[in-house]
Amino acid sequence: MPTRIGVYPGSFDPVHNGHVDIIERCCPIFDEVVVAVLHNTSKEPLFSIEERVEMLRDVLADNPGCRVESFSGLLVDYMRQLGARTIVRGLRAVSDFESEFQMALMNRRLDSRVETVFLTPKEEYSYLSSRLTKEVFLLGADLEGLVPGAVLERMRQRMVRD
Ligand code: ADP
Image (cartoon, rainbow, N blue to C red; front, side, top):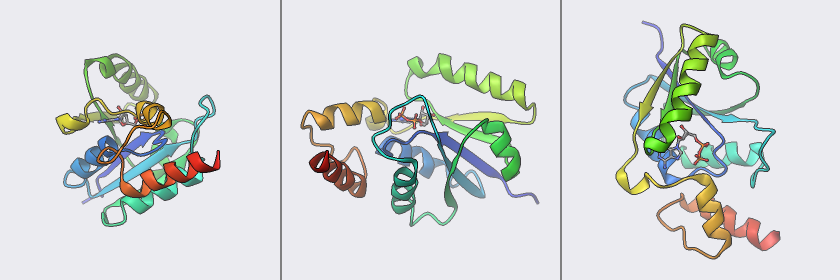
C-alpha cells in the first residue's frame, strides 16, 4: 500500500501550540506528516528558516511519524517531489475560511491530484497566531502554555539580544 503523506505547510514564525495541536491530530491520519516550513520572502521573519526548522524538530522530537523540512516555490511542486497528495491546513475561525478556500482551489487547479483537508484545533488555541504571539510577547506578555517551552526560551534570548 502506498505511504499516505500529509503535508502541513506554513511559516511557523514561531511554532505555537495551535500548530502543535494540528500536527498531533494529523499523526493518526497519515503514515507520515511532513511539516513544511515556507521560505517566505515577503515577510520580515523573527526567526530564520533554519531556526524555525530546528525549533519544530525539537518540539516534535517525540513524534516519530513527523518530519520537518523547508521548501520554496510552489507547494504543489514540492509535494510532487515528496510523492504527497494531501495538504493539511488549520482552520481557526470563519475568518480563515476565505483565504484558505482560495488557496485550496488554486492548489487543486495547479495539480488536480492534490486535495486540501482542514483540521480544527482545541478551542483554547483557536485565537492563536504567530503574529499575535510575537506582538504580545514584545509588550511583555507571558506566553506560558501558548508556545512550547523551548520556543519561549528562544524568544526570550532573541529579545535580550535585539
Ligand atoms: P500563523 O497563522 O500562526 O502565522 P502559519 O502561517 O504558519 O501560522 O500557518 C500554518 C497553518 O497553521 C495555517 O493553515 C494556519 O491556518 C494554521 N494555524 C495557525 N494557527 C493556528 C491555530 N491556532 N490553530 C489551528 N491552526 C492554526
